[in-house]
Amino acid sequence: MRIGQGLDVHAFAADGDHLMLGGVRVPHRCGVLAHSDGDVVIHALCDAMLGALALGDIGRHFPPGDPRWKDADSTDFLRHCDGLLRARGWQVGNADVTVICERPRVGPHARAMCTHLAQVLGIEVDAMSVKATTTEQLGFTGRGEGIAAQAVVLLVRA
Image (cartoon, rainbow, N blue to C red):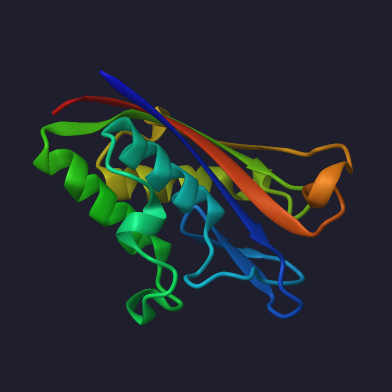
């Protein structure tokens, strides 16, 4: 087995009407400042997967200055990372992601995120967890300046 953890943070942008979270379009008063679609759930999950195999971080595989990744769908990043795992004889056993924000409310969308992520990773939905917490109005997430996500993943031999 291998275990990895990941973290991603994005500031909110003044414009936009939604966020991408776990591959799901979530209505929100603004978007995020990001080179790609800024999906903190998928970015943290990718970092956890890459970290479990000591393959660096998401920025190493998808540099933010590279025009190929401008406005990219983060689900493509997840597919790539899953391919790297499988090429080395590993697969996700289970994963747990925590979204950190005051808004938007993540709970109503968590099941759809789990379903999407599990489908992409080829795992059972009950092996994928997405949940949320607030910081009780403390820090940048508490002030509504941005959003963060943490992920933990267990890899098992395929």
